[in-house]
Image (cartoon, rainbow, N blue to C red):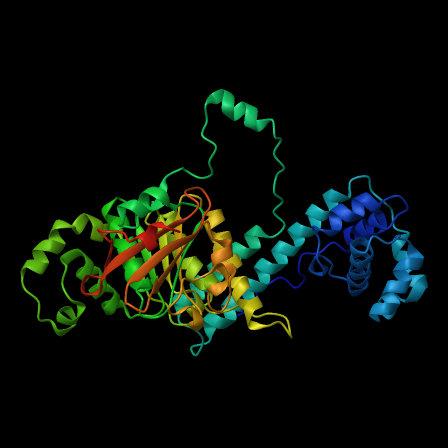
Length: 439
């Protein structure tokens, strides 16, 4: 089973030694500061080289002088001086030939690291695929695709753009926007679509307490966007597939989900659905298990995006996504923040795709106007978003909506909504009260 695997993983110990000698040489502080930011201990295969890099990184971070004496002190502090053969071994490694362009060696070691990761991923995939008790093949493929995506991003350096590009763009009359400039999705509430269009390439956050209607608003975004030509995928972690389909039918056909679930609905429902068949054909539903990691969900979405079958993602809801493993001692809020970072990075990587993320609010925000920090589990989704809309129900059962954040539009918007729960639909109140306007 493993005879096809190489007996030796890609490595270049001489390049490791030469790079360390170059970065630790007298007068190389600037190069060391630049290259250390692009490297990790994983770039170094030899244990001695790993230990020296770890000490070098500390000296760079603390802006201390870099030489064999300060490195020896840091190695002793970290308890790794023995790995390099003591001070004599350290001096021997640092006496290697230096190069004029250490960035070339950084790129070489990055390429070796990526190849090692690919080989290890392939070996793990072989083991998992051979184990009948492991995940099913769909999950295996999704996980492998997500991991490969992470490897593809390793070592990628972002370009620095000259500000003169602004003059060139203005001379061409080019719009100053990222992505395609298209609307990423539709709220189905005309006034809200006007002041805060769902952007492509950025995250839109919808927060509410349970029962207020965040899933209904998510359903409305999916259906209205499909009607307007977008290709949404509803990532539904909370509800089963048929319940999600029932909500979509309820929206399009204005019929109670209870009647749909009972199978007790009139024939005209079919005719109404036929009239919006083009919209139904635009959309898709993904129902992963609660706790599915984001990288598995992302893999399924990327496949649809690359086939041109998805340009809007609506996720219901944030806290049900599996949290990645974190370092020992890290709290749960940190783990949730990592998930938010992953979703934000996904949106940034797919500038033509709108991303709408639903999330719960804290219990003490049940009957009052929500604030920026009221998102449950972590405030990062609301902070990371380009548009943040909060819903709440007051003591008189009136549903209110407020834009807490609108990066590219009107700063503040607060309106009363009518919630037609039986049809999964929100409408703007025909008569806005003074409280609604007097924000």
